[in-house]
Image: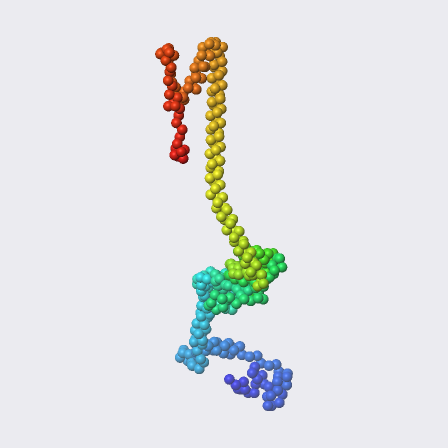
Length: 383
């Protein structure tokens, strides 16, 4: 619409001030105040613009919309579709070996378990899914040579000083995993790079409290366990969220000039252990037998003791009884004691009874050689 329609007026109905060309502002006019805009006209124009935006045109005389302005409906539908896609972008899946860490406006918010989960779409919330069950490995003192079993020694990592001021070459492997995803992601930057220097530091400290002989002997497992404990303490103090799963001490070698001497020492120790095992085996076999024999001898002695005591008590009681009888009848008691004594003496002997009244004047014949017991032969003695 033209502002100059009906005369040379400004946009609010006031004529331009100043010269006749209308290029001056209102300050150049006279003393008449400017006219106010038509409020009804403004409302009508606003309603018409709104109808054009929603319906595509204004109403004509027949009640329909006039064409001219483009329709906003496709834009609105497109916006709704984009909003739906944006909301759907918050659906995510956490695998079985992972753990979801949800951030809200860049700050830790929640931990999600394996399976399908939902978070508010980005940039409101974001999610990280670190693998918390995967076992990671760090090699210290060596590097694996591809698919072969050979190891490439790294002296700058493997050379360590023992407590008795000797050098050893130590190669070991550290296995670790994530135990706290929040600490692992946000409490330290690149915590996995910290595992190797912490492992070196821990083993050097343990070796500094160990002699060379112990390091080369069967104490490796104890050294590995102590190293693992020290590593875990250091990593927990730094809140890295890392758990040391295992420390494997693969090799501990003496310096080259003393290898032969230490091999001899190890051989002597093995021989010592072999002899100790043999002695222990012999002891385990002989000691129970000796203990059984000793116990049998003790029981036999106790039985003999009881028998002797019982017999002595019986004889004492018998003697007491005989004494009382002797006091009553001395001759009878003497005779009976004599007969009992002779019975005890002659009961185990061969006897020949000779009647003194028969055959007066005849010399009795006694077969003494036949009555003498025969001596055992050598064959019987050997038996």
